[in-house]
Amino acid sequence: MPQIKKQHFEISLGNGLGTVSTHIIFNANAKGEFYCRLTPEIESFFEKGSCYEGGVICNTDNKDFLAIYATTLAALEDIIVVALRGCNEPQITEEYVIRYNIESHVSFAQTEQGEIFPNASFDGAEWHSMDSSKREKYGNHNGTNRHVGGFSLTIGARAETKTTFIVGDKVSVKYQRYNKEGDSYIASNPAELLNSWVGFELPKKPKEIPYSDEAALFFHNLMLGMATISKQIQEATFEQQDLLSLIASSSGNLLMPPSIRPTQIDAK
Image (cartoon, rainbow, N blue to C red; front, side, top):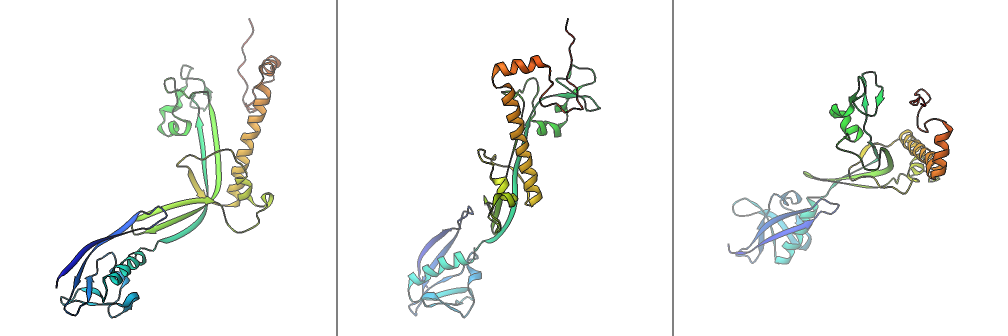
């Protein structure tokens, strides 16, 4: 039977999944019908002997291939688009997660007992960056790969809803603000409490863990601690006169735990 045309069909799946497509060859038979054999991309949508929108009928052709028939070419074109969408409906799953970033930029040497020194010139001290796992943990800084601005610790976290879309081997993931039903009052909702911290953005590929109220409170408290430490240090050192007064007072290191004694240098 004569071939009418060959046509490329392509649709967007949306949600970051890209597109799917198929190539269809349209023919006409002696009965005045238009028909086309089904391709693998749309075959599962149809069933032999069934009738579809636009008067399209599914049957086998003279070589026993599954095909669809209609009195108009437009009806076949329309149903192919419908079939292409119907065969590629995404599987959607939704879960609640906490995405977070704990990032350290510091360089130090330490002894086998864990005592920390500024560099490896001290007796028994070795650079922590000799251990590959610690290079990533602390920012991979040393005497040649220095962190501009000094040492820092960055902590950020958000409670979010993670939606995963799957079509065949195509996978797309979207995140949005945590939207689980429940009490939206911040004081009694750990997710809202965590998300009440603003003024920061997570990096492109943060780590993530399943959501729990305990985890949300944990990260809230970490960020509260960071804000408290920052406030304490900046209020004591931001103005140079305050810094000089603090140095002169010998009141110790603002960040040093009580179990660690500041280095003392005898006055000459």
